[in-house]
Every structure is written in structure tokens, then in C-alpha cells.
Length: 300
Length: 300
Image (cartoon, rainbow over all chains, first blue to last red; front, side):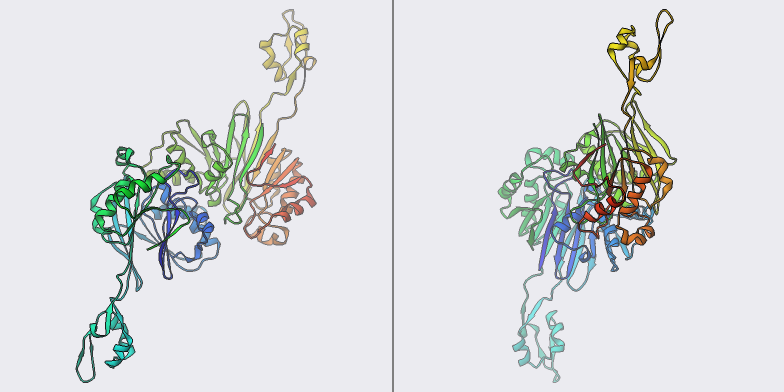
């Protein structure tokens, strides 16, 4: 199971019952929160996402519609008696804000809050299931995108063939990662005699907020699902550029050039009451474009 | 028109679709916001209270369920192009938090934000319609209550009688404030010959969050409506004391001793799914007790 659930798809000013940016990426036992606008914890309750499941939070930048809900979420986690660690990846100054707010309230969290400052693009988290990288996007202030990529063995074992070559099950893990096997008599069993190629590891990339900038391409190249902000429609491209945002057509052009499989559009300006225009504009350029709708989970 | 509208009646942890503390006091053209927990701007939208009408915000203390929504409200006011001044009355450290958040987002507000630090009890705002005083309540950290009192002339003119004594209309304003009138021939017209007593100016007092403490009495004495927090029921009085909160029975005892006309109960712990117990417990002590329900306006 690898999916993204949208909690908020609106830009800064809440409107038309749309909420500021927040998304939850689930991958096996991991539940990652990306951005955390005001009211994210209410959206989590509404869509049955348990606060206790979140162990990692990624904050793209310090515009309030992407983080004003974080302190409330952290405080609630504390009130609920959380004991396990929470990791926050964010621009460094967020730490001072959170610390100040906790100190002034004389709040001692019952769990450890680990703050990881974003400073260079690259791998920020890796275990045997997932690799998360940060990359630069181009907004009015420092802003980060995130890419979530499955970590998967390259090869899938054919157990019958492996048995025929007398390979012990204790070696199977190494087979999955492509190793050849030497039998006791010194003879070689080539890996591809007993394994076949695994389906490629999947990836989800999150690019918000950003002006259209092709420097992003190398970081999102080939992902399965790309979320790219589309604050405006093309008739307001000038405004998009001026405010370091993108249009739906630009998001679609990015998806096309990056060779991704599917595009999700979000961060809609509150000047738009309905959203159909975003979908149709993007699909003219990149047919597999969809609106990122609140409460919906999109499979990666 | 003098009323209080409840936007949030829950304590720190949002639950059962109840929200953290926020109230709006309307008095003639004034719309005052008291406290501003996370999501207050959404509650304002829901209950049709326009952000632009709020010119004064009063923050009782720096526990997050009373102010985490303020930065979002201020930011939204800016995005909506507000130009008129906003006044915030709060413990001094709130200014640093708000300033830091605005600076990191590189936000220039299009309106003037005036910060008034609460430091001593007393009058914090006065004009020809209303007088607002701050008073100490007793919580785990520094915490303030607020009293909103109508400013009203003492006397109501009987125009016919005033005319009979040849009092010019230009003197009527002074008559309302109790002055006698001397006619051109030096003869006296006693004020009470031409006026009658006005109904008393009304008052609303807000006391949250606080342990039961009778030092509060002098500040809330005789008000028409008292809001007093009641986080717990009496069976958890020990917990209430330990956490510097009150029970419904204690809130009622305070209302009784202060000689107020009506009590509103709020700041309910999220351990209570239903609230009837609060009302019945309080009414045993002070019959004119009611739950402060979200979305309801209570006339003062």
C-alpha cells in the first residue's frame, strides 16, 4: 500500500470549505505528513487518520498555510499522552517558533520532538522500505519539495528454481539484492537463473509552492505520481509568475517533461469557487491529470 | 444590541466537533473577539461573522487553545486587503511570536497591527459606548479575564418636560449625564424634574482559564452575564485544582457569590462526549446557568 491522501487543497485563504495544504503519504507501516496548515488536525479526525500514526512531518516552507497547524497537532499529541518520537523536517527557523510556543505555555511534551533542518537537497530519511529526498522548488521564500521512493529488492526469487540449485533459504535475502551464489563445491549459480526482475520501486513527488521552473525536472523525473501546485488558471499566468506560483497548464507541462505517470493538481486560489477549469486546462497538455480532492486517497 | 456569540467551547484537545476557545462580543458597532484557538477563522465563516468587522482582539493567555488561530486570522485579514487598524490585547510575549511568523513568511501586512501588552488590571479600552477592563484570573500561567461594560448616560430625558422648562436641545447631552440647568434669569431646573433614571449599563465578564478563586469576585461583581470556565464536573474536582481549572459547581458558586444574573459554562474537557451534566450540576447551585453552545448568541 502506497498512497497519498489529501487533507487540504486550497491556497492561503480558506474558502469554499477547502482547507490549507496538508497531505498524508502512507507506505506500508509509515504514515508521513506533508505540510500542516491551520486545521490539519481537524481534517485528520474527519478522514480517520490517527495522530499517533504520524512519526514524520515534512514542512515545505514557512508560509502559514503550510505550517500554522503544526503547533496545534504537536500540542494535541502531547495531551493524548504520546510517548514515541516525532521527527519534523523543516526550514530551520520553524524550530524557534515551536520552541517559543511550547516554552510560553510551559508545556513539557511527553515525547521527544526531533527537529531536522532542511538545508541541502538530498536524502533526508532512509530505511529498508522508503527513501525520502528533499529538493529545491522556487517560491518567494525558501521552499522544498519532497520525493518518497519505495526501497525494494531488485529481484524476485523463484523458490522452486532456487531449491533445485540447493540454495539455502538463509541466502534468499542476498539473492533478492542480486547476488550470485557459490555452492559448497565452488560452482557458481548466477542470480538470474533463479530470480526475475521485480516491478520497479514506485515514487511520489510533492512540489509546492513553486513558480514553473525546469530545474525541478531532475528531482521528479519518472515518478509515478507528481503533485504540482496549480494556484491559478492560464489567464492569470502573469499573476502566477509575479507571486511565484504556477498555473494548471504549467503543472501539466512539468508533468509531461518529467515523464511522470500521473499528475495531481492542488493549492487552488480561493478566487475559484469551482475547480473543473483546472482539470480541463491541465488535461489538454497532460491527459492523466486530476484534481487533488480533500478526503480522497490516490494510489501511487 | 449587546451579545456574546460562542465560536468554540472546548478545552485544549478538539473533540466531538467542539472547538477551542473563541467568542465574539457585539455591542452596537463594536465586534470584539475574545481568544482565538486554532480554526477560529473557519468558525467565523461558518457563523457568518466577518473578519473585517473585528477591530479588537483580546487574548487571555498563551496556552495554544486560546491563541493558535490568531496568526492565521491576521494573515487572512492581510490577504483580504484589510486597511483599517487591528488592536490586539495580550500577554507581551505573543507579539514576538506573531512578529517572528510574519517576518519568516516575508509578510508585509497592509494594515497597522497595534499590540497592547496586558500587564496591570484595569481599563484597557474606553470610548463613548464601551469600557473594557482586564482582571487577573488564576491559571497555571499568567491569565487574564475581561469585562465589557456599556457606557451609558445616567438619565433619560422627558422632552416635553424639558421644553416646558425652556431647556434648549443643545443642553440635552449634559442633561443625560445628570447636570442641572440654569435658565437665563438664573433660576434652577433640577435635573430630575425633566429626566428619569436610565436602565443600568449592562456588563459581560469573561473568566477563563482559572482555578476557583474568590479574588476574582470584585471584578465580576454584579455583571449581567458571566462566562466562567468549567472544564470538569465535580467528581474530578481534584484534577480541576491540580490543573488550575474549575468544575461546573465551582463556576456556579462563583456566579452566586458575585450576584450575577446569568452564568455561561464552557471550556469543556474533551473527556466529556455530552454536556448535560455541566448544566444540571451548575443549576443545583445557581439556577440561571446555561451551556455556552457553539454558534449560539446570548443576549447580555
